[in-house]
Length: 319
Ligand SMILES: [Ca+2]
Ligand SMILES: [Ca+2]
Image (cartoon, rainbow, N blue to C red):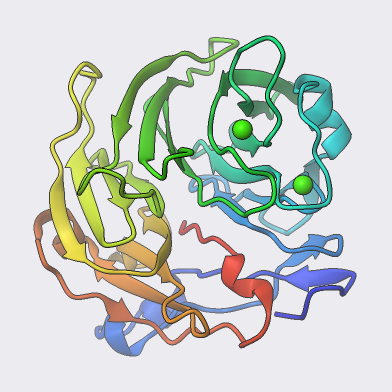
């Protein structure tokens, strides 16, 4: 990781790969390797397409999204001008408004981008948006308007993941309440609709700090500022999920679930923490514990971004 200001910065990419081949995952760690990103500012959100190796990176300072293939070649960039063409009520600038959450389908054919701003649109509709990039047709469309975040001068913690034609969108509203919305995201429909809005589990007023899905078991994991929970996903959007506490934990910044890459021992829940603030860490919960245990231990992995850089804002996605 290089400091901000270089022409090409690296992002931490936690690959659940060869380093996890040994039996004791606690003593292993993710492979950290440089990952090229265009431009001068930091990435705040990243997503991976598990089956095809695409990586999606979002930068709120340049209001720019890159999709890179498995060789790191850029296959599509989405610019501020392209975002504003679809969201003309926004006034994106060089601050932390803009694209702060991304998700990809496993194939990479559909990429979803959460864009927020602090402007109030005159038409009374949602002030923020979900954009969708369709890779086969290379088209970028406005998928859904909604309210994600009310400020343009702070970096929000959004998180989103796709499962079985539904995009699950996590955000925190103006009163500090974490929300999860289920949005129709079928490849065959041109625009979304919000099927359900749920508060995050835990005490009222808890903010969202992470969201990911195990696509094999259709289990959603959600982090607040105090705990990580899981719930089975169903097709009944009329009732909130039935949450189970995975463990109490503070300082979570992002969740990811590895279900497609690496050995069985690498399958499970990955937790990016930034607590204490000067020392970020990636922690791991093996799949069997993450999916069935409660009060489970987190295994700290040997990754620690350099102090003083803004790399701690880098979100995480596991393949
Ligand atoms: Ca911006
Ligand atoms: Ca807004």
